[in-house]
Amino acid sequence: MNSEFQILRWGIPGWVCLLTFTLFTLSTHNFDLKSFGTALGGTDKLTGIAALFVALGVPLGFILYQLYFWFKWDFKKDNSEIAAEGLDELQRRLQGNGHDKWRVIEDYFDELMSIKAYQKQLSYDDLKRRYDHYSNRTSRIHGLGASLLALVFGTVGFFAININCGTQWNSKTVALIFLVIFVGFSIYKNYSSLNRNVYRQLNSIMKDILRAEDKTCDCDK
Image (cartoon, one colour):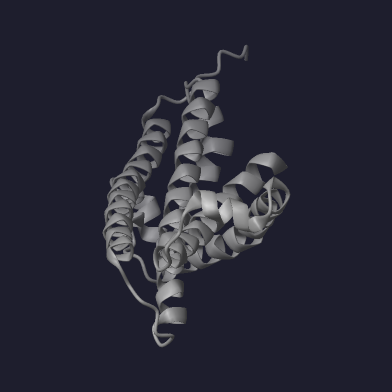
């Protein structure tokens, strides 16, 4: 993964969190974009604020990613059985928490790809293509999970800071709450569906390797 994509990957959850917090803050004031730009005294300050916003989003997004993985492996429902369905040897190896089971699945898959696949009548290029597709989908799923966590943190952070500050809520704040709930629920449904599907996709790749016929040797004796 190149560094530009990694920065973007970390940045998106951070920007979502900052944007959510900022929108809630602005919703409690009589905010007008034109007046805001005039108050800043031109585009230079606005550009500086935007640059600061972008810069802060990357380290914040990195932290959110670590929190997401911690929550995913230690608290979220474990779906490793989906990847191990119909694979007796893999099922016997699965022990521990979600993270431990996933490490076992990864080791088992690496064993199949690096050893078993070469002993089977399979197109390794096709297997690699399927794995790359699986890997890309997994990366998108983690992005959705981290962005959902960012949406929650941005919302909870705003209310935690302002709950005892006498902040006046208005119709904009209420509308934004409903918007966040709708967007958050949509992300969660998409995340849950895709998460189960990538486990099934990985399970299918492993089954195809094991079911394939062994290569025969026509070597002269």
